[in-house]
Image (cartoon, rainbow, N blue to C red; front, side, top):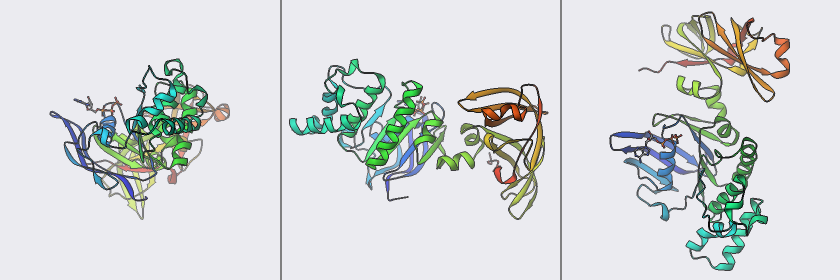
Length: 356
Ligand SMILES: Nc1ncnc2c1ncn2[C@@H]1O[C@H](COP(=O)(O)OP(=O)(O)OP(=O)(O)O)[C@@H](O)[C@H]1O
């Protein structure tokens, strides 16, 4: 990582007796796009609000560019926040909304007008500059909000579910706008979202939170292919999780005995250890693979050109296989059919149970 722009050191936030964020330790590099994700109530927004200066940590230290920020109020920071509800001024037009932050900083009329227009142009909405924001579409308003946040050229932009009110097709469009903008400007983005696809599509690294704690930090690929806990394995993507016990261990390879059979996986754990094998749905094969089991097709879910087939093994374990829609018939993945599933040992991931 480049020199961290943001550091959280054992940050805790309490609301009376309730601990919303616990012991958060995290570095965010300058120019990084970091997504914070996790289930509702896990502490994502509280983490972002502490970065914005809207909430102060109860303990621990937050630094931005090396400076301790714990008690620096929002208006003395250069950390604008964009969120779903936008908070544009309804009585101002698009340009005036964008100019607002510059006006507050005492930038003169002609300079602020010119800077606002530059940003509206960059966001491809210059033609709507003089329109009242109430008359703009959701996507156009979101671009005004982004232009307003970026016109002061901050080093750090905070985004809280900024696309959640938009239609699906606009979300995809805005994702590419945001990604391009972030790369071109080299601004650090911290982006809170419920949506795994949004986080994975844009972020360099994702932070997965659970009940106020950081469960894992890594690239989308790392958290998807090598989840560190059952929580992360279940939260991220369509993983098959086969719990069991290590029965043999030899030179970086272990055998895990599960109710569905004994399977090999790369890793290290002593015999007797409780562990699971995690296999991503797109690594599961129909009628192939070094580790095999049988299961019955229960249902199918279509997402674009991909299909996820849900199956049930003899002991009731739910399994998932992701395949191309056009391969579905050839693979015989029809509801009610019993099929052989398998995966190659190198495609499995060992998850040693956390000690309670
Ligand atoms: N001002 C407050 N007073 C009391 N409790 C609060 C306050 N703000 C947040 N909380 C609690 O802290 C927890 C974390 O809230 P937070 O808004 O950070 O969650 P989140 O992960 O962003 O959730 P969501 O995805 O639903 O927005 C929640 O249980 C919430 O009720």
